[in-house]
Length: 341
Image (tube, rainbow, N blue to C red; front, side, top):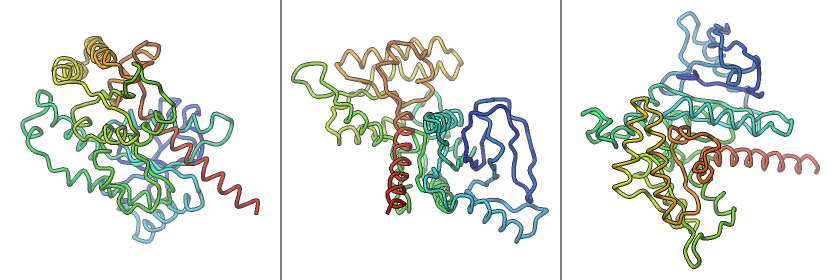
């Protein structure tokens, strides 16, 4: 829906169906959006970007026209102290689900939703998907199963970060689990706060003042995710830093429940995937974990919202959205204090 584009918004997405389009020589080419929840409001702008995060010049535009378009677009955000930059990941749907939460939660008290710039690139989507599949031999092609060079992925993510910085955003987030495998490399030298989803969820769990399920035992947090995310180890690192003992699925659980669940998902066997996921969660929960971080959007969406097992899980995307809103509130508080003096 937003593939290959940068979306700019200053209002809530809770609008009836509107038109959205691509800026092309100061002219808007419209197409109707059918989803009433995800429709971008009329004052928003959608700018087409290339793989490197640049705005391509129109064949019908002069160089000065193209430069003017870039400058005008960026200038929209220069004075917005709470503008959030969002780098989309392996799933466009999960990116939009995160954006929906960010908009709705930031405006739930009747205020304006947070302004944002969204970068979503279909090339990056495919790169990240190939990386995930390379950790599941049964799902990957022979080419994907070979040792992957992550340099193109990191370079692509770094270019998105640089583009967002040039756009004037004041904070950057990545609503994608696997992208955080390279968070340190991507965020190094960033001129604005670059939130880490693992840190956000670990901090929330720390602040929750959980009690061990067994007397004298450490606080245990389970993590259920794809092989690629678990291998990257950033959730384990952030949780251990906060003093938690991390419990991961053992080899048998991965081979007989988690991997088959993902295979079932790819076959569109939702019921089979759902049953396997329930087994994987139950195996973790019997090991006296306080809660399970379900770090996979596809698996998280498998269970009904009222499922008892889902209530024992936490979604890192929720923690990232809440942390982003908290950052914006802190910025606004500082601004109000300065205005008073």
